[in-house]
Image 1 (cartoon, rainbow, N blue to C red):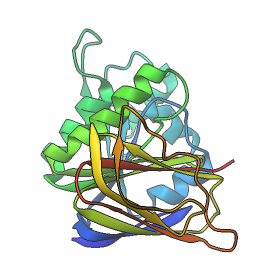
Image 2: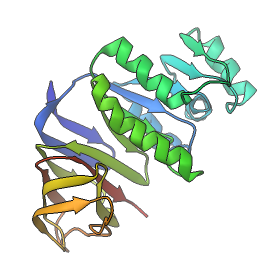
Image 3: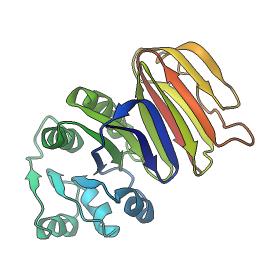
Image 4: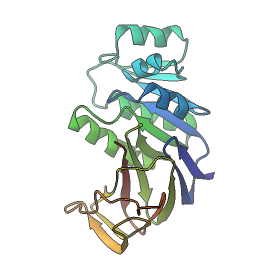
Length: 236
């Protein structure tokens, strides 16, 4: 188990340990920049959910597994995935679960416990982003610790009781705390322009948004005693 988690824009150090196995799951939303995908995929198993295969093909990033119904991937991308000789789990488009949900289930079955970086989740339709984010929070029940990320946006998930210290390599334009459960208790944030100390955040009134690092700082810390808290960072 590991307490450290690194992405191109930041390093996060959690109080509680995370699985050392790290999986990058490329979904079909806004594709990450090729350079970001290449850097983030280093030393991580890459999985694709349907049209995520197109982002991998453009970035010359070879996945280890492809899951989906093939209805949104390009024919060239899907054929490239097939030619790689990697395992492919293909489903009928007439199904209840989304491709991303199926991929998360398959990842859980393969690794039992893993840290999952879900990319290709931002942009496009709100209902897709909503489903992907809450599927990622629910994947904790499958033994998966998740975050959603690309070069513009990162959402780290913190399930209480836990704390994280974040060191940014690139200064974000905004930092927000998003209660993803109905309530998050004992929420604190330090190292920002508007600190909080032991507050209750409710998803009926998510006010702790658009915070900033202190003028000369690059680090900040977040604590939550109970509930599922999203730590969102944005880069222009």
